[in-house]
Amino acid sequence: MHQTLQLTLAPEIALDEDNFRRFIIQKLRLRESDNPIIRKTRQSIDARSRQVKINVQAEIYAGETPPALAGARIVYPDVSKKPQALIVGCGPAGMFAALRLIELGIKPVLFERGKDVRTRRRDLAAINKEHQVNPESNYCFGEGGAGTYSDGKLYTRSNKRGDIRRVLEIFVAHSASEQILIDTHPHIGTNKLPVVVSEMRETILKAGGEIHFDTKVTDFIISGNRMTGVVTNEKDEHTGIGVILATGHSARDIYELLHAKNVLIESKSFAMGVRIEHPQNTIDKIQYHCEVDRGPYLPAASYSLVTQTRYKGVQRGVFSFCMCPGGFIVPAATASGEVVVNGMSPSRRDSPYANSGMVVTIEEADLAPYKDYGPMAGLQLQRELEQAACKLAGATQTAPAQLATDFVKGKTSAHLRDTSYQPGLQSVDLYDVLPGHIAFPLRDALSDFGRKMRGYLSGDAQLIGVESRTSSPIRIPRERESCEHPEVKGLFPCGEGAGYAGGIMSAAMDGERCAEQLVRLYSHA
Image (cartoon, rainbow, N blue to C red; front, side):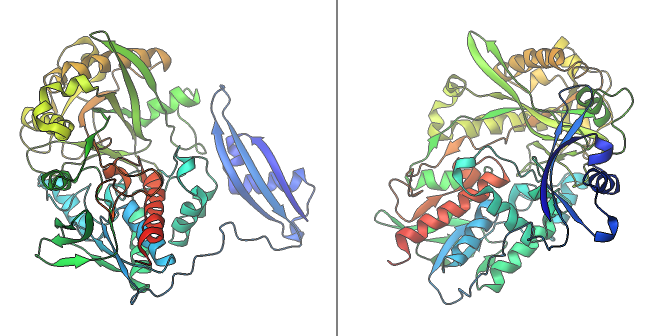
């Protein structure tokens, strides 16, 4: 027997394995002695009404063996003696590009300025405890990229860019939980991602690929209008059939190098602001309509907020970004003298804090004072905010902060709340950090969000700055179909750093797409 059910259940039934099994057996009048196999294939939370419900799709098998939830595992051939392609950056875009190249019979050679995922932890500890920033190994740079030490969210709106299920199954094949194939909003968690990333590395190496850690690309080899290779910090030259540039949104030196070599880059829209932190219990009460706590079954609640404000007659979008339920705020600077904050969550999302980026769109007029920087104008605005945050908070990794209610009222906070941000907070007037085109739209948006979510704008909430790396302020242009740079052949700008992705999933899919196009164009050259 094989049957599929669509169910709407109370959390205590849907989210407790024993209760769920008993419910299904009773509903279908099965016998436990028949050893029915009951598994969920889809699960989502509906908290729109006061009674939270769980939507579940389940498959029930009795007397037959079910197929694997994940599809057949990919067999990666030996490519050690095949033509090679170069990949700059070992984040999700770079790693998935490498795996796809191997499938297609090309040897990937990856260059990562940072360290392997395990060694990288020591540098993260130094940022948090000693306020020391290693510019080559930090929360942004190193194996797995910025996504490794993040919430590990795996949902995306980029359905047209690639095969979402395929990417999820590759994660599962490298030790991620099969739960990510079931949840509507899957996540792996910062505590589990390093293992997944390590296993992906081993797959690449076993197939004959190469990964060079602590290896920074310092120059490109360009002959005529064709990029044929890279030069590293050891002055070594490497060549291949093509170069996939997947360096992430914080590799500012790469943008500067491209600009210096007259490789076309261009300004793009982005957003900046702060992180807002609440007690997780506050968000649970708002979202789950509970009086005390969310109980033993429901996960830490999340939210998504967006509004439109006006500043000097110009409409401004303000929105939550990278919301981390049950998470932590972390220092994401990539150089000394700057303070940057980001968010992450463990797989269980069991921290007592919730945080989210709260950011304002940057308009073209905001960059007018930086016109002499050309396409690098957005980078300069980022730098100025990050450096101002660092200076005002004491020139360490201590972050400037202000209670959300005080920020709206325009007064400095006499006291701050407890925080998940390990380097500590310094009470400042964030209007001294943020320019008016960010501060005032943010103020108006917080008031609006407080009306939409009763209790959101309260004495429990505090703002921590600055959230400046939501995305790259620069796009490296490429042809729509071929993913190749329009002027420099053999160069495939890829992922978040090139302006074509906004998270782990979209970056992974973009990496696969760039790999496929590189092979299509140059594997027989």
